[in-house]
Image (tube, rainbow, N blue to C red; front, side, top):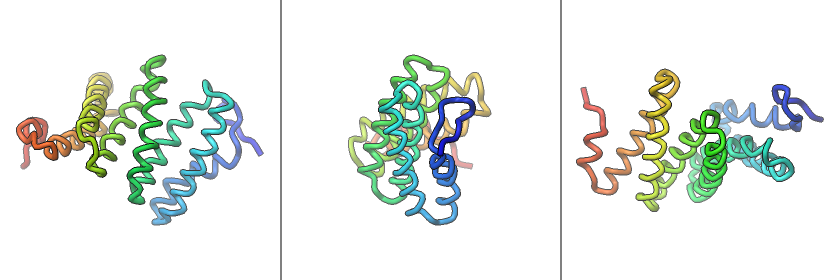
Length: 181
């Protein structure tokens, strides 16, 4: 019934099949099944995190982040927003204690939080703040490892430009937007 996670504490065997299958389910246009699997994964990791927060909160944050992607893809943006908010809260706390290990994940969740806010057209100033924090983290990380973080940085910069455009701050957006060939 239980497997191991790279020498760490045991995980239910279900999680190996369920979380490993999410990307392939989504790619196979089985989005509803992928979403159900992501919801189940978040629920299982929530229970594990309640029992052992130190060991399982990173897993819960990852599961919530993945769930938010699937929820947004299904048009359930309000639910996606709640999942991203929780993932950001957990990852912010983790990054405070171990920045090198958790800042990339925090930047990723902040970027998703900003994207979901844009989709909802809700609290764009909060979306801009999250996007800017994500950009700041990715810029710092890209200085040390450009190949690892440049794509993520450019993705969040695109979100930031979109937010600025929607806020009517086109001059600022133009300064960030790459020149068109």
